[in-house]
Amino acid sequence: MNMKKLLTLLLIAMLAVFCLAACGGSDDSGEAASDQTEAAAEESASSDDAEESADSATYESVYEEYAAKIQDATPGLVDEYNTECEGLGLEEKAELANEKVSKLAEIETEGTEKMAEVMYATDGEYSTYEEWGQKLYEVYEECGQDIYDAYTASAM
Figure 1: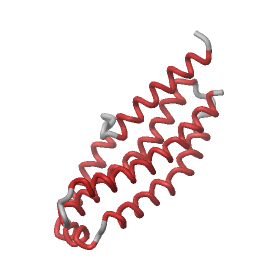
Figure 2 (figure 1 turned 90 degrees about the vertical axis):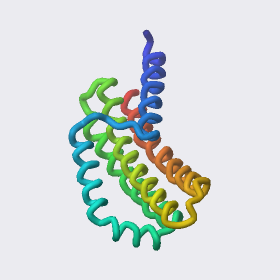
Figure 3 (figure 1 turned 135 degrees about the horizontal axis):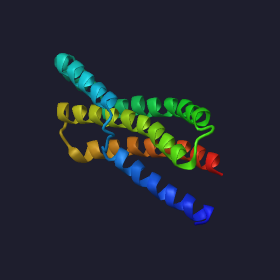
């Protein structure tokens, strides 16, 4: 199999993983489960604070906060990828790139959850929630592509 076909297959596989991560897929690592459990416990413990926060938050304010978090995290993740990929094979590089993009997916998911809180605390219109969630997802896609671009550059 020539290099071009191999690279094409790897990019297709990465896009599949990218879509899974963006659609709520998760890895089965204990660390991720532990983080989610801790976050759920903290959220549960401060449910009154969350309700007050959701009442004062807007879709736009949540979008701006989490879009900025994604955009701020991206250069560091690209740098981490570039440092950590040295000496790795093509498959390991793809896995590393997916790990870095998954970190952005976690931020995007958290922002989408905050938007759901806004929806339930305000108008309850799913279409409005969906519109703002899509905007945040687009920021995630764009920034995730920066990491995949670093992968592509390192694979050449």
